[in-house]
Amino acid sequence: MRVTGATIHPIHLPLCDPFVVAYARWESMPSIVLELHTDTGLTGWGESVPDETVTGESHSAAVAMLRDVLLPTVLGREVADIDGAHAAMATAVGANPSVKAAIDLALHDLLGQAARMPLHQLLGGSSERPLTYPRVISVGAPEAMAAGAEAALGEGFTEIKIKVGAGEPREDIARVRAVCEAVGDRARVRVDVNQHWGTPAVAVPAIRQLEGLGLRWIEQPVHGLDITGLAEVRAVTSVPIMADESVHGMASLLQIIRERAADAVNLKLMKTGGLQPAAAMVAVAQAAGLWVQIGSMVESSIGSAAGYHLAAARSHVTSTELTGPLLFSRDVGDLAYEPPTVRLSQRSGLGVQIDRDALEELRVGEPITL
Image (cartoon, rainbow, N blue to C red; front, top):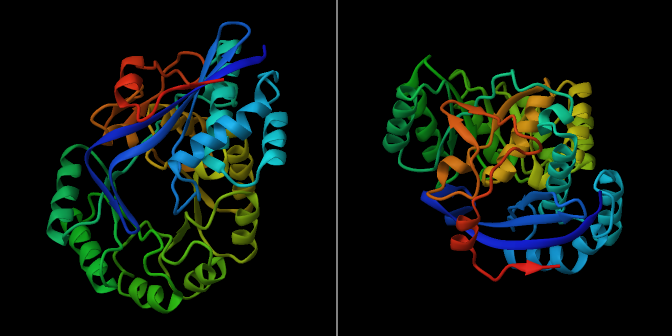
């Protein structure tokens, strides 16, 4: 089975409420849905959610990269040659992980469909393992965030993730304490700083004021490029540290391991370049004794399903956080969420039914066919 053509669908996914993190605010999420065609009539689906701050890609540049550089490397290629596809993409251009992920996901989807197996089985796992996710609360006033955490408890969530990183560290400390007081011992709280505290000189005093609250971890308290600074923070504080913006491909993971910079890593398919490199990184993290979370860049059901399939296939993944479809007022797929769990389809491949009407309504440019 060979790849014979492709269609690129540039879209914006509408958010129910603005999504706010330390470095950005979105009213809608820019996404690129990729459709790969084959000589057998099967169609595979992938997705790219570029982020200029994290992946270094803009939406328009990612569309052009797919069209002009990367898709030509896979047209005519055997679908099963995913390793060869990654090698060809790496030769064609460096970086651009979310665009490479779109191709990787679509190839895996096709391979699963051809084998008539759900992707988690193709990757060697089982869907019997429960896949849970936290309620994610955007940055806001302490009282509003505490109220959001209380509401999440009522919906059955036992894990709460709060975004901080607006204003001074003292304001973030107030946010964390308000949420912890609201939930007590009824839920575990994890804190995502999204690099906002910047340096160890700021992060260390802030974290020390949060010690004793029983936080599950603090995610990316310093600049993503400063892995040495992340190691310094971890060495002198007692709250577990998770790396997110610091970990992209294998090289950054190995540096984190060498410098003992984190207790856990947040692997996202849009940062790693897809399922194949992410699976290799899970294995390396496991060997090094790091916890692994599979997270997302707020993808649709396509990218989110791919991440959950990987988590189902790798028992060392201790946490999943792919909640994009819950944040959208309109999605392009049908990944099934039953708070606080997600239910993977037993259909072959990604198992996501694509809503072509939604693709048409959400597009921000004409589909591009190769």
